Length: 164
Image (tube, rainbow, N blue to C red; front, side, top):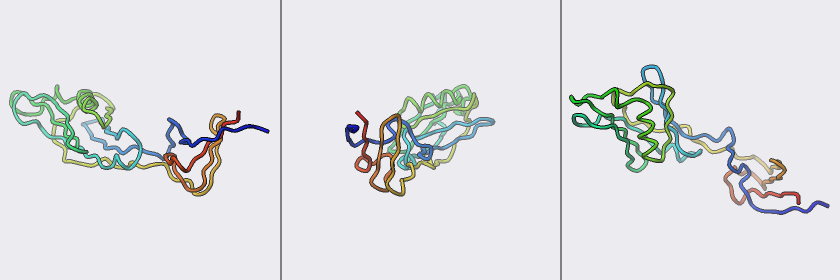
């Protein structure tokens, strides 16, 4: 007979199922995109919003700051107070937002933002679809079982057993 160690565990560990999605917002440049994503999968990321403004004043630096769940990106300006293309590349915006924390930004190229963008919310974040019934799966030799409809984050719904 095989001995088993029974413990409660999240059944995906560090992996994420394909139907668990991070909320995101895509800002379009002239020919490329800037993608802003929530740091984790789930519906909480849908609460974030992003607004792009032109910094007030002459020769201002690009900046990114949060107030609650709203990210404001202030585009850098030139000596006349207009957006400065050299200060507002996707790479620089990505670095500023990533340094500010919370949201994660990736750029598809070397494009830039040169105008304000009205506040818009991240969307599409969701958790994995719950299982509809008791389920048994095997991942890397560990047997996971649920007692009913649960998702990967349920701490009380999954039990694992590892053959000794």
